[in-house]
Image (cartoon, rainbow, N blue to C red; front, side, top):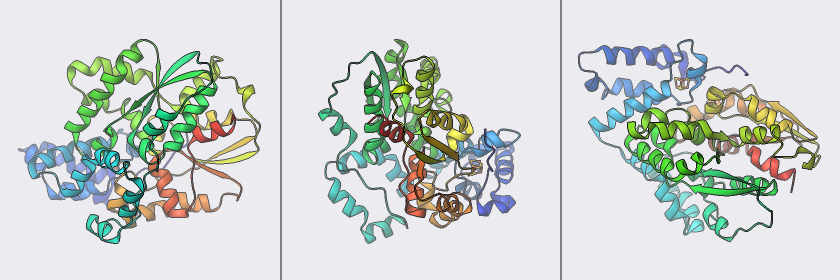
Length: 389
Ligand code: SF4
């Protein structure tokens, strides 16, 4: 696994904003006579505010401190004490906003560019635009002539459904081409987005919905795959501790069978279910940036090895830390977010050969790359589909 530098914010030079500084403040709060009272502390909120929840510390810190998890827990108590602010409310209802906006995508996209609205929301960067056709709408019209020999569940997160349905379309068509019947599960909320904002009650409900839709299918032996690392890996990380005690065994079973797209492809190639001789040879240089949670929880080798199965490709994995976007962080702290991007990721992409394709596994990373270096980054599923299409 490539080592990557954690706590890579410029501001982290100050002890106060370092992982150690944050951990010390949290320890003081927990050891105080009234910890719950301390969890409404503005000082603690300020220091945690600049934590990207990237989980770099979980793998790189010798004590494996998972500051992202602490931050979520802190925000949960903070909201309980002080109420939920306007922006957090918007994030809480983001999935609903997307589903309503998707009925009139062109109007919604025009509205999202409105300077008054952006000022009201205090966002300096462009809000992500909606696709003119949602994944669900495309799926209803979709048919395939391929004969299916196996089934696979595709967890369709809200970002893929509404912002980047072309990624799921590529994954679906690639898998169908290889003899899989797809069972799409269209999520109606984002557990990861909710957890990152400390909306733990809502995240618990969203995870319960995933159990309800997927458990029986997974129990019958069908694999569960996801395209967005932060969403899929939530099932293997916080979800087991977050769901109700009586759902824990079911969530554990889901987590053991939940795989990233690249993990699934490698597994299926190794057992002969996907035939690599069917892949077209395409001379391609791929420059790969892997999502932070994937780096921390899985490592980057899986994505590299999967892409190397494609004949004619060379894969260069960037030795970069967090892209700086990290979901809502890049909107709330635009300047810091762009400075983090400029530390490693943006210069590395600018130096890439002109004909290289940029591949980024996370939706936030792709958005940050588009904003920072005006380049469209692709998901590995799109590269795989290109090799059989
Ligand atoms: S989650 Fe990332 S930004 Fe937050 S303390 Fe850990 S390494 Fe630093």
